[in-house]
Length: 194
Image (tube, rainbow, N blue to C red):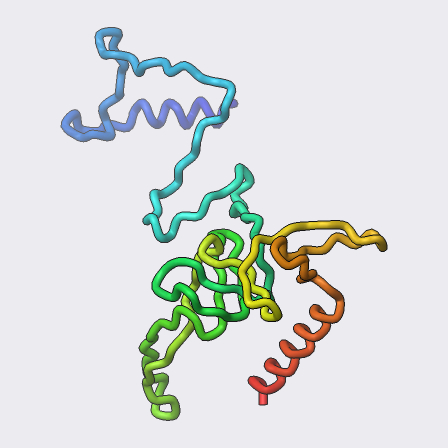
């Protein structure tokens, strides 16, 4: 306590010129308008840290994780594009983006990308990459009957839940198709690594 009193007395003896900002004390006068009191509701206040551009924005849950949309298609499904500049084309889904509900389809919606040179060993080049297509612009496609259809869900006798095409009744999800797709994926990874 004695040390604190000595420190306070030394500050009071310290003289700072009156035109200095640090020497002036701030007193709130009763004539100054007080900040308005805002009614609070049951909801917590929305904390906005920074305003993002519309192409950077992702809808988030209260715990700051992105909202993941349910999609009617999965990786490996054969789909037909039903709207947009690629309308009528058929392809297989290779990648899903659930935060913005878009899909990548093999050899559809090709974009030109200019790659910069990385030293003398790798020259610059122009490559074609697949761009995303919104999942609402694709429908599942039956290769056997060559029709597009909406997807339905049903439970089989063994208790497994599967997806099927409503128009044809063809089951999309089956163990054989899944194993074949995973086998093809491993083969492509090995080919790329070699």
